[in-house]
Structure formats: C-alpha cells, structure tokens
Image (cartoon, rainbow, N blue to C red):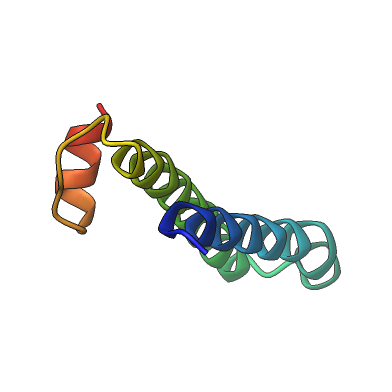
Length: 78
C-alpha cells in the first residue's frame, strides 16, 4: 500500500472517531473536555488528508521531496 493510501485510511479513521465521539459519547456525557479530543481528531484527519495529497503528488513526481514534518508539509501545501 502506498503512503498516500495509508494516510487516507488514517484520516478516515480519525474522522470516524471524531464523529462517534461527537454524536454518541458527547451527547450522553455532555463533558466539555471531550470537545478537545474531538477537535484533536478533526485536526489529525485534516493533517493526514493534507499528507495524502502531498504523498500522491510526490508519488507521481509533481512536487520535489519534502521533510515529513508539519511545517514543511504545510508550506508546500499552501
């Protein structure tokens, strides 16, 4: 499996976790601390989505090699 496919799977997993936490867990418990975890999962999903796009472009040699940290990926993405 290519890197971009793995990143897509991770993004889908994080979105599913955030959705479940928001629609099921938060509605039952009403704990505001859960919102922090939900936002964290949404952020991770967006980060993995951005990584998937960059890995896909790198796989087809549309962009140069990049450092695998958030800062360089974000700069390349924008």
